[in-house]
Amino acid sequence: MMKAVRMNTISGKTADLSTEALASLNAGLRGEIITAEHEQYAAACMVWNGLIAKKPGVLVRCQDVADVIAAVRFAGEHSLRVSVRGGGHNVAGACLADDGFVIDLSAMRSVRVDPQRRVARVAGGARLGDLDQETQVFGLAAPVGVVSATGVAGLTLHGGTGWLLRKHGLAIDNLLAVEVVTADGRLRRADQRQHEDLFWAIRGGGGNFGVVTSFEFQLHPVGPQVWFSVPMYPLDRAPEVMAAFRKIMGESPDELMAIGVYWSAPAVPEVPVQYHGAPVVILLSCYTGPFEQGEKAIAPLRTIGTPIADLSGPMRWLEVQKFLDGDYPDGGMYYWKSIFLDRLDEQVIDTLSRHAAGRPSSLSSIDIWTLGRAMGRVSETATAFYKRDAPYMIGIEANWTAAEDSDANIDWARKLYQDLREYTRGGEYLNFPGFFENRENQLAGAYGANLPRLQAVKATYDPENLFAGAVNIQPA
Image (tube, rainbow, N blue to C red; front, side, top):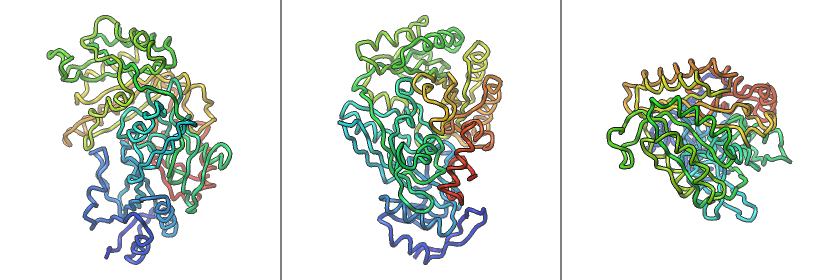
């Protein structure tokens, strides 16, 4: 028999859930309840970021939508503060909370593709690799992220950046509909014709409005092979390389998406031994237009002088989507921040290069995402995702392996973030949020003039604030 569990409530107080209440919930599930005495509790509390060590009171491992409905209704009846786990890949560990009530969708990973309509229906616990595997059978892809272990839900609900954003926009720009269990325990379909306000809010507003049990994405012809560039240049050539990168990408077609990365040269045969582990600039890009034009499209990025190594060439789309997987293993330690920039001039490049040279961990990177094009053609009020006018986003990725190095790596990321603030008009990408240390400013920066409307939608569908989301939008 399960023991009574001390839980956090919406009011911020704690309350004991009785054994009878837990047994009643468990009896109606196809899945199961996991509490501290369960043999799988430690495994259930593990997430991708090894820096996160939270101890929820109850995890409800759902097998289907009926389980989700039961869990939401139970949480509402007992006024429990809810968190939702999809892929468990949020860098801040937002899917877990100490003494919290976790609705765990990680077993719900189905993907169904309609190749005639070019639509994929994706369950709330699916990962990008699940989606890519199913869609590529038909030569199709959804605009999602760049690491296959990432959860579809977490990535999408705060926007979703990836290799297709300049051609097809963010993940949310390709979202046709969702099914969501709202705080009243009802399953609602939200799209452009029904519950339009909820559909608007979910596209960028995070997990504040309910548990999304399925997503419907518009798919696009991609692959099976594309062109991928991986030229590497020494760090001391960063001013020249990044100035050229800025010019090339300003003139490139929408089909070419690139991320300029300050990183470390990998210890692979293609890289001369003397450069293994050395700080470098890597110009990652993916061309998804006509295959026969791809080599020419990526050529300018590969010929800014002579790179120390170049791993570029044709690659299967599925392999592109997994190319970075090995650099972000489960259990590593991660602290990521982000900032939108209006320019990539000499001052910015100097700041980035200086901090890249001072990284306390060779695993850490500074990523320059080229934005705009299709992403920027969507009105800032068309979805809750507001920050569409910036040409660049900087991802500050502190990555390390030893717990004793945590303070140094987190401090490095925060100092770089502070030094970049003079080059921005504000805004952060909430999938790279640090630990949400400054929630009010992060909300204002991410949502701008859309925030009051989000608060109104929150009041309609979750007036008691059952769903706190990764960063909580208070009901109006």
